[in-house]
Image 1 (cartoon, rainbow over the protein chains, first blue to last red):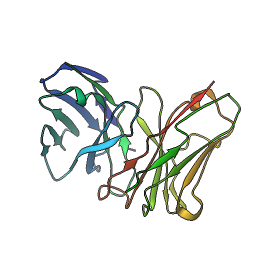
Image 2: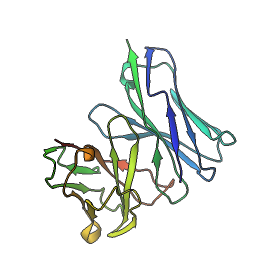
Image 3: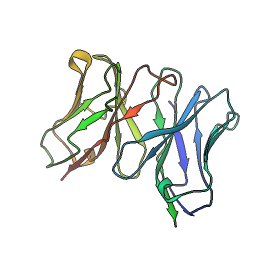
Image 4: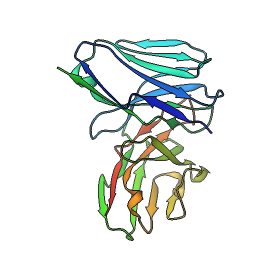
Length: 111
Length: 115
């Protein structure tokens, strides 16, 4: 089955700096990679996703890149703000199958 | 649109007791999932319902866990008898269709503590 590794487990950045979270997956058949953000005490919410036929996707300050050959994908947050502080989860899925999540990254943005 | 709701938000029980968690998915979502996160680890899949049928229950830890979705609406997850290692946050999620064509909508989770 699919296995997703996520790094780092914690990340502290200064407000305004960029943050990068990296994930690797094991199953080359996986074709959809969403990212979820969970603020303290709240539910995980989808913030961006990418499909295997795309190498990069951007939404304002958030971007995701995918390298299918290396089987890794990354979340990039630019110009970080205190409200970006949360736990971020990457995930991978094969068509029609369940999501497999990474262990999460605690992002702290210091003001 | 009302989101996925879970009840209770917190539960503290003693080892050996029984707890039942409830999930109300978004109306019209046939697909309902249960996930669990043990502190510091990944959100781990438990099982997947399509309407009232169990599509995939490969993530259920053992036979102390029983999930039901009678009538294809809300779902319950019963842990009986609870053990210390069952502590964690139990998330329910729903979607219109499985997979990439319909994102998962999560509930706020139930934090279960077994003492």
